Length: 604
Image (cartoon, rainbow, N blue to C red; front, side, top):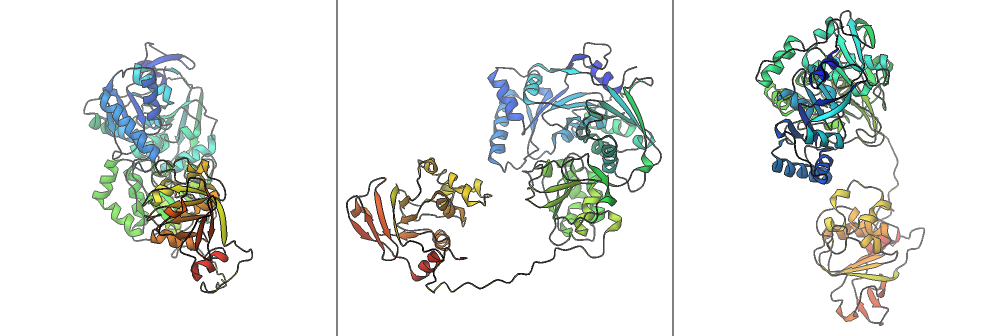
């Protein structure tokens, strides 16, 4: 009388039968660590001196940040690669795609199998009638080392969908309707099996979409009895004949539900909670800034064909950004072969390499504060895709909304898209920079402070303010990173005092045009920089920011020592060592530089 989950667990334990509440050790057929969580798995193994039980069953999948664009991810991926080389473990590297899909498509996980991953959506494997679980890094390390994991047998729930599936209801709509009905915790901790004629007719891609959101329903897994088509797919990938698996006809369930799929409607989840799913008709033409198609939920070839069907011959609405990311490299190549990418690019979409993409905010970019995004992903928690708000919908609805400029369905795309109305402002022209304009508050033209002698030439903007901090726009946060990439001066921000003056060598500020390389000194309260010469762009940036920069020919006569006090006369062009009274000439402010300085900056 076992259910599907009970049969799988019993087959992988030393028990003939199991029942809900039993705690059993389960042998794990496939053990996976990602670039997210993988490094901690490695560290746990190394710190405890643990072996690898079976390298042939052990894998790394790099899918959350395939580009390695974030330095921490790059370091973590390299750590895992080195460990994998040493232990003979296969890595599905940055070109492979989402790990849960890869292990299905590579034939590693088959119906009736068990698998664990550092991915909380490992229960996606329920789409093929396999038992997949996301686990923490200690759990995964133990499975890597010993090949087994303890598990509590969950109660099983049976959901039967009756009636005929409406033509406009996608697999995403099905799972959002289920979320609307059951919420995020009504099925908490249960293994849910789905049945009915409409379920039997679901394709593998559709089953994956539904199974992938079991986590959002609080379920251990959403499980499907493999159809003949799914069995054939898995056998072709595994290269061998497989035994079908199904619950017994008289299996006992903790609860049973029957829902009429003919009553399901197109759905959208409102920002913050996937279970806050409402009929799309309740979302009244909400204007969007961006759209995303992809993730482990909706980045399969069938999803992308639907997107192409909607986008063909159309353009993304002005001001809207559409990002499309296939789940795996195989899907990516299939899109290329079928010409889908041509349709996407003609419509104005950005195409990413295979991976988690929008769900892992680092891969293909994030949304910013106030940005409204419609996404085919499985989660829209605050901060999941950035700082904006995210609505969840099917791929076809996402594509239609991108074209319309607001949330809608493919059959309601307007002839003309909604556009963002321009804001008309009257701007007062500033006074000429050649004039000796005064700011409201008089700025000093004689500065006194202690010096930092930074005795080096060609200090570039990456040394001053590294590009990993370029997303920072708040000047108050910039100071802490000043010189942290300049060897010997990494702790400058901690030592600097308000009113300090920097004296340095030739070509200070060489490199990029980043304004932060000037503003970081202003953030710290540094009063001025004197150098033998400045990078051209840097000098302009400093002048326009009303930050004093001056050049000198020879500083030696001043006999300066670290932290001496000096006086700088901007108007007359002198630099005096207040410790010994010696003075030299420096290039004084030009009339343009003085005018900009006095009014507080070019835009003052």
